Image (tube, rainbow, N blue to C red; front, side):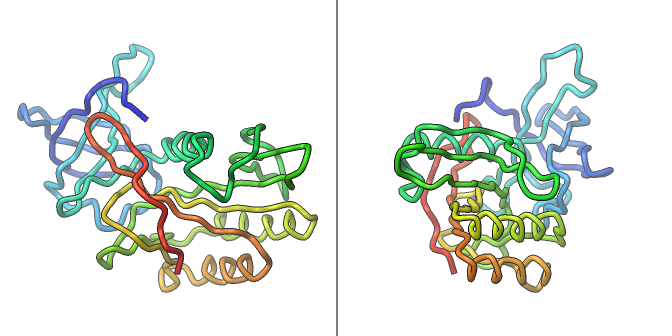
Length: 233
């Protein structure tokens, strides 16, 4: 996925009110940017952290900047939670997810469960069972080479897993794909100490037949590219 324009670099001053971040550009100017990530973003929010932004040229937008990535060590980490729902469908269509090949129909935002919407419903009316695909954004890594999710309690995420169990019991496939917006990791696991409730739901879902995959991506100032499938622990 290519960005419409090359990202602009600066340094994080602060992130506040969940959706705002002050960033000092290399020019010395400090700008207010939209932070498209409501999570805690653990490990990324130190003052002075290198940042990359998109310049928004749109008079209808209140803010002229959007935070796209922060650097942890030598690795750029994508923080825009809007991108996974474009990245994962793209690599599915390109055949880079072997477990999800062969589905000619991909439908977004299909209702299921108790007032929920699945990110993508994959269908092949001829031979394959419907595949209900939920996508989760991942940025967190506290052990070298290991990506983890979540970085805080997510009751909504646990509820989604329990609803996916229902799809498996109905005879369909249910697949959770973790979109890891960093390329310095090779394995994936659940952060059980940070959200025991999600970990319990994760264990129940795996036991019930829900499938779990994780794919890492390289984030640059020009775009985001698929890197590798991760080993699931």
